[in-house]
Length: 380
Ligand code: GMT
Image 1 (cartoon, rainbow, N blue to C red):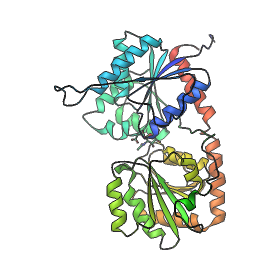
Image 2 (spheres, helix red, strand yellow):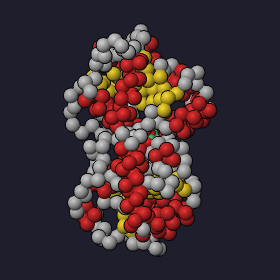
Image 3 (tube, rainbow, N blue to C red):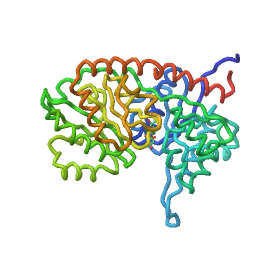
Image 4 (cartoon, rainbow, N blue to C red):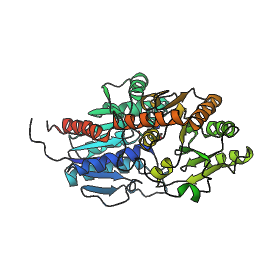
C-alpha cells in the first residue's frame, strides 16, 4: 500500500433543504475530522453548516442573468467553477451528490481544466427514479454515471432500479446513508411539548420532509383523521415545501386545524423527535428515507410505506410497521397500535437503536466512502 496522504476533495451538492445536502454535509464534516481537505463547490452554504469547521472550504458558484438567457445556465457556471477549483486547489477527486446536473457539470469542469481526476457520483433517489424516467433527461443521467469513475447509490433498491432503468456501462455500489449519532440520540426535549401547546397526555405523531407531492402528505392527514377517533394526539408537520399551502388548506377543510401543527423548517430536530411518539412517512418514492434513520436513533418507531429503500431501514414488525402505498386505513391502525401498546412501543424503540447503531453506523460508512476516495485518487 502506498502512503495514505490526506486528500483534497471537491464536493458538489444542493445546498438547500433535502437529504442529499444533509448527507453531503455530514460526510464532509466527518472526512474533514479525519484530516482531509473538503472543498464545497455550491450555489450557497449547505443549510446544515452552522459553524466554521477546520479543513472545510466553500467556493460559491455565481451566475448572472443576461437578457439573452431564458434560463441562466447554472450547470455551465458550475462546470466553470469546478474547473477553477480543480486548478487552484489541486484537487485529488470530486464527489458529486445527486446526478443531475452535478455529474454532468463535473465531467465538463474536469474537461475544461484538462484534468484526469476521478469523479464519484452518489445517486440519492429522484435523480434516477423521477429524472431518470424523463425522456428529456434519461440520457443525461446515463452520461453522468458513465463519466464517473465510481457511482454509488444510497440503498440497494436504488442501485437495482438504476441498473434497470438507466442501464449504465459501469457497476454501481450501494453505500448506505448515515447520521451524526452525536446529534441524533434520545436528547431531553425539556418543555418543548408544552411550549408547542400540546397537553402532557396527548400523543405526538411527527412527519418531517420537504413537503413535495412525492411525500403524499394528504395520505398522512387523512390517516391522522382516523387516528384521532381513537387516540388523543397532535400531528407535527415539520419542513417547508411546495405543497405546504395546499396542505394547510386540506387540514382546515377536514377540520383538523386544532390538531395539526405546521412548524415550518426547524433546527431542533433531535428535540422534536425526542418529544414525539411515532414517525409517520407515507411517501410514494423514497430511495432511503434519512428522517426514518434520524427517528430510529432518537428512539422513535416509524409507520412508513413499503416502497423503494424504506424496507432497508424500517423492518416491518421489528422497528416499525410498513404499509402499502395509499392504504391510509392500515396506516392509521398501525399508528394506533404503537400509540396504545407501551410494551410494543418500547420493543420497537430498542430495536430501532440497534438498527441505527448497526449497519448504518457512521464510522463504518464514512470508512467505505474514504476507501472509494483513495481508490479514485489512486492512493492505495
Ligand atoms: O428528495 C429528493 O428528491 C432528493 C433527495 C434530497 O436531496 O432530499 O432525497 C433523496 O435523498 C435522500 C438522501 O440520500 C434520501 O434519504 C431520500 O429517500 C431521497 N428521496 C427520494 O428518493 C424521494
